[in-house]
Image 1 (cartoon, rainbow, N blue to C red):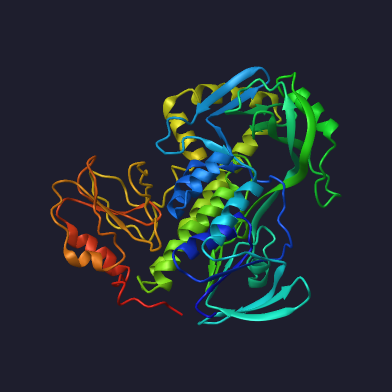
Image 2: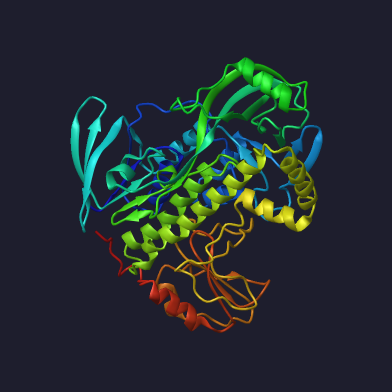
Length: 503
């Protein structure tokens, strides 16, 4: 098993990691200490960029998820009866111009089925007790639910085991950041009297704290409320009774909404933390094991899933010997750590904005945000942040040159519905886009992991090389094929016939 990957944690991030690696023909083992999956909703939002990236997995994964969830296309912000902003997502350049509201349990169920179709099953009730890593592999001790111990040796380990990560603790990596001094509660309820259609969610700013309603379906909603300052004598927040949720809804909401019954409730405190490095030798960290933040914006699960997708294609190229340059795996940390820091900062600002206590500050906030969020350029920025379509890697060590007339290296390349997604199939291939005047590419260029089917690039002309995760690697002028070839050579690209799996 020394040529395989041990993934610790079989939640949405671990399942995504296993699915991506398995479809790229990397042997994986997926374990989790939990003995059964939770049937509660927990994370509920799948944003467009995640659905775009899932479309690469094939098998109708994104379409299946979309068919199960509720499409929300409008975000409303209100302060009492005063509308602050109405942000529509329908104009975002994506095949999925909405946020998909779907219980995490359903998302996991779909991912499990697609993973099992590739011959991989999550092993529940298998706990990681400890491990040691050397220059060649990771030796780990596992404990099964029946008490049986197991010693294993894998080439690599990926920690997807959440905010209380055993892997992170074992590595001794500080989880740097703060815990905000406030309590929050959330729950899924059947409701009547909600004044918005099922394709719109609403955030209410109130002097006591915010209230958010996410529509899960025609009469089912996720409700999140701020409860105020934490009790320092208590180590954790406790969910209030349903009657308290109703009272808070009556005071902060529009009035007239009735909670019919509670499906699930919980309480939490907000942590804003991140590890300083997402890689320690042969061990990588992803998802909540690497970063946690405010739930404002609903980015947490999506950020972790995109961690997995970012790492998987790079790992597959190196593992299968298709690219040998260390920069591929080394790029995971700076790329995703920068995104994690951005999500922490953005969600933290949204939380602080919604929890202002000073009456004058709230009045200024309402006036400024009403004006600013009515401006199309500001709405465009907010749409990009919410949908995660604006995420890019402008400072990535993988960025090549950027032709002055085209897009910048590291930027997302919007998928086209009439083309196969970038990175589809069982091998992570780079994709070429070229204008009519680009000239013929050199035959040797396709001896490495580059798709031989060159796609049109009519908008800007020139030649673009797109990464397997749909971000621009480089852009050059017509005829500059040699620069593309040198870029692939710098990655240590090798013909498939000459490639061999790395240890």
